[in-house]
Image 1 (cartoon, rainbow, N blue to C red):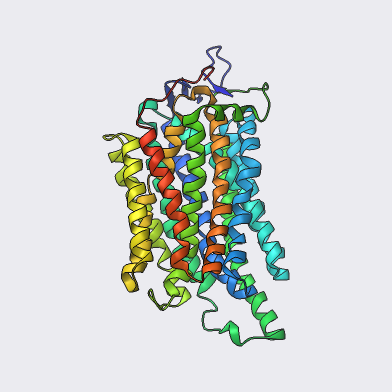
Image 2 (tube, one colour):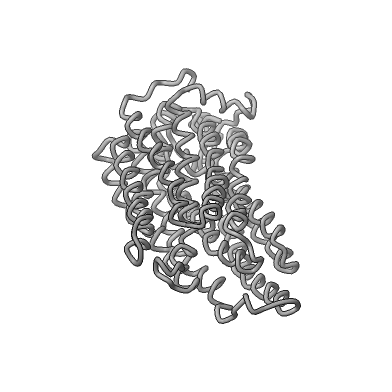
Length: 437
């Protein structure tokens, strides 16, 4: 798909001007894209609140409870490349509307899941929700990069990701009160038989009410986005295989960046998913699940603050250097958390959010340099790597079960950050121009 200006006079007069190499002048669309980042970031972070509730309701071990993340992020592996193909044929704004409607369906599927209080149905609802978010994210990342000067794409994407972090900061706090707080006084370990079944149904209803509210909000946003579907004058591309974007993987910088997105998302989600159970440990903070859930926003809030700061820093300092520095910071904080106790251990883990802040947009921008008109294809391939959020958290949970220690399990995210550090150093060299881009 190529965005261009039609000078024939038969075009929507509101169509934005620009070309793929110079960027597009559509400031109003940036507001819509910022809203998309806020929405899919916030909904994704609710998984961190649902995991301890699912673990409690269905008496799961750490590895099985991480299937919440696996079901959600598996959608990235299956739908990212098809989403990029839809962008090429339907355009950015129409595809965003499709993604938002799919997210709405996912939220509404929580109704039958709650009615049956079945773990597998919850996983299916999360999978559909994840599919919609996948489509929206494939649209949002290259679109915000195109809405302005290409030289400031990394800084602009980091600023947009700050709205993602704003969502991940606000949603867990509200979700903790709605999902974890309503039935906090009940000791599930004392329930059996009909009493346990009744509790599962009631707790499930509490979860579903939250997602019904989200479904209504998503429909409103989808309608607004649809009214702007002609804001960019986009020429539809009917040629090329749906998997054409995979040819970009032959370029080392792009391939390594895609791998680092896999590792980064996996590490970030693994840590976020463990926070509630980690802080509840007597050797750390020894607090309740509700209190621990209210600490989750500090993790995502660190990313929020870091992204606003990072948007400025990245306009002054080489993105590769910044990426290497924050990856080193994450490794240091993990080592501190894993080898200390009490509040120091807990707050060191939460502080990793600050270091995570610029990783995704910086890796994305470094991997995408030189893609030009193939940006949407590249975004589809990179978004596929977000499936790391389905795989690494599961193995982190399995490592915790096998070792009997959440502290020891942090070694896996640390290894991920070590590889990201190496990519930051590698990316200091100039990006090659990709033929046909």
